Amino acid sequence: MKRVLDFVWPAIGFIAVLASVWLLYREFRGQQIGPEVWRALKAIPPSRYALAVASTLLAYAALAWYDRIALRHLSVTHISWLFISLCSFTTYALAHNIGASVFSGGMVRYRAYHSKGLTAAQVAVLVAICSLTFGLGTMLMGGLVLVFEPHQLARFRGVLPDALTTPATAFTVGVVLLILVAIYMIGSIFGFKPLIIRGFRLEYPKPGIAIRQLLAAPLELIGAAGIIYFALPTVGNPGFFVVLAVFIASFSAALASNAPGGLGVFELLFIKAMPATPQAEVLTALLVFRLFYLIIPLLFSLVIVVLFERNKLKEVLHHEERHAAAAVVETRPMADRRPQADVS
Image (cartoon, rainbow, N blue to C red; front, side, top):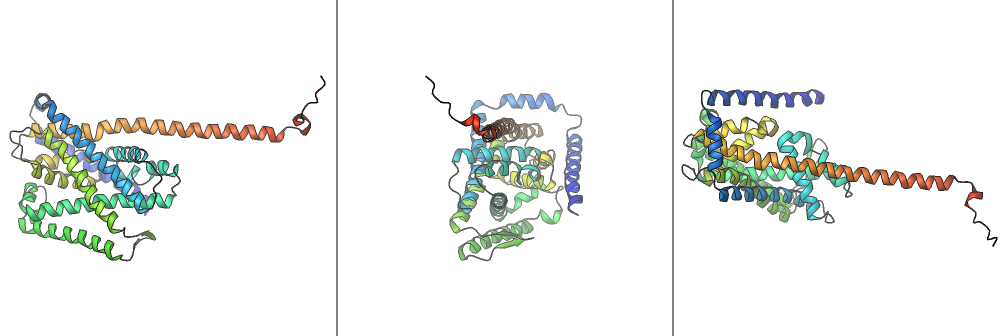
């Protein structure tokens, strides 16, 4: 069954990409969006680009904090902030572009943290804590948005079932999300029994760890949404709160679709949820988001992976050379190893 699912989920993601791209094509069919997008990109002031870059740095700093929090939960304190930041940056840059199921579940993190002495079980817990941190942050921010601005979900009317877009339903969903976050905090404070899923044991973190989780994840979401907010024009900009609300809903749906990088799914939902802003300007802001949050980090992460693997290869080769030299010494005849007599 597991082998079947290994093929099913990628297929679902691929279908989601194709369907979204087709819907986007139908949305923009007959429009000359290329020149409009290019004009919109050039119209963004340098100061707004700088703020978008700052938002990107905030988002990736918060993601590095995810790993740091998980390591504190594991009582691992000997790994430097620089190493953690590089590992986190590489992991998420690859996962966001290629698919979280491929990399964030273990490959990059295992290679990096195993070199620092962590076991496979510890890396698995680290990955689970990081995923849980993001989930908690999404529930907290989504819950607050739906409780205080339940009408925001109406922006997805026609995309989501009508029953889910009414203010009453949105408010109820928001309350439920906040209750789940509260239960998690209560479990952390009072030390509830650990969660056991198919033999995998996950202890409730200490309250200090849980509080850090509820700070780090909203910072990452605020940073990521900030890229889009600053790339949108000031005229017709719906405001940061609206952009944040739409971002959380669209990004969550894109992740659930399993489409690599949420390609197509994210753009389609975001554009549909911003009917009062010209579509070309929304698309421009989303292109800036993909450039800053996905494409540029991916390029840097590939360089980091190559350098890391090259250094690991050098270590292996040097170890083999030392081992071979030691073996040669051990196998030399005893007579060859006797000191020569001084005949002078």
